Amino acid sequence: MDRVKDLASAKAAVIFTKSSCCMCHSIKSLFYELGASPAIHELDREVSGREMEWALRGLGCNPSVPAVFIGGRFIGSAKDVISYHVDGSLKQMLIDARAIWF
Image: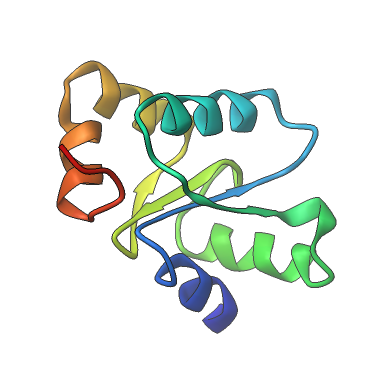
């Protein structure tokens, strides 16, 4: 769990994904379209990916991917991120965390 917390707070925007996950791809694309350059950690390509996945579940990530952190804080999975985007708060979260500038 410490590794996940360390990685989640290492950059303004962090997304834990799996390379085969279509929703993960959509969330990454959304962040890129907003001008963010998140740290991407693909759990199926990480040596300790399975342990990291269990740690994410322990933090309340269900499903475990995509798990999105902004400013070191867990903000949710795909449905949460899309809700934040629709109501306009995702962009402000990214600005506040200095993941994007305007």
